[in-house]
Image (cartoon, rainbow, N blue to C red; front, side, top):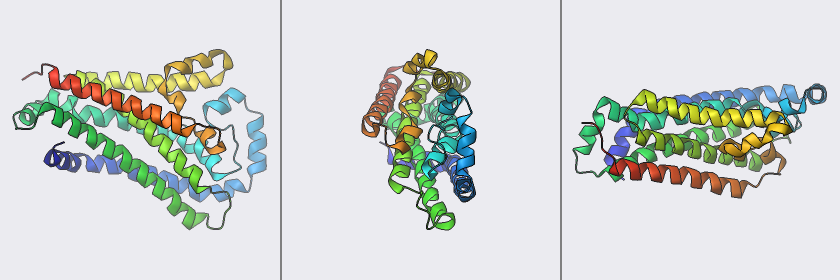
Length: 270
């Protein structure tokens, strides 16, 4: 890895990374702030949820109701909103780190330095990993800060489950970002790379959502990595977090590794 390039790329992209991180932290604090009032009406909310179609409830991660903070947040935030936000991040940043530089001609300047192609690609991948790690770290910290500010004394907050939820989210988006990074390493055009990555990422997300609606089409989830991410099962203690985390890490690592290998060998436009 080129440390000087890493620092330069972090300086360039840190503002964008922090915008996502601060936005996620703000929304988390908002969710924690309103939860005590929701907890007071848990029975009526659960009764309302019971009359909703089970497929819809499963698609949005509300199978566990609102009995605990983790059940509430896994559906309200981690199930859809945070997933969409981080999917966008994992499309944009890997594209900017490789394909955009090739498209703009900036990559030629990097390749003219003594640094090898492999080091350049690995460094750019490290910037992405750092970015997604920072977002999830700040999101996790904001949850604990919110608990201290708005839920102190509440017994419905389970720290271990909350941490596990964030770890699972981190590994999912390492995999999603790894695939986008691979696409970026294959592309000379920024818009084309972003479009292909978007189709793949949101295609996976859509297949997972649709597959949850009915048992008849649940087989669609076999074609998406998002099926490995199950927030409601994590907070209920029914998920195999170790196995899915290892698998998602492998997917991300293999995709990034293939991307670096291709980038080292392919012809680039001057």
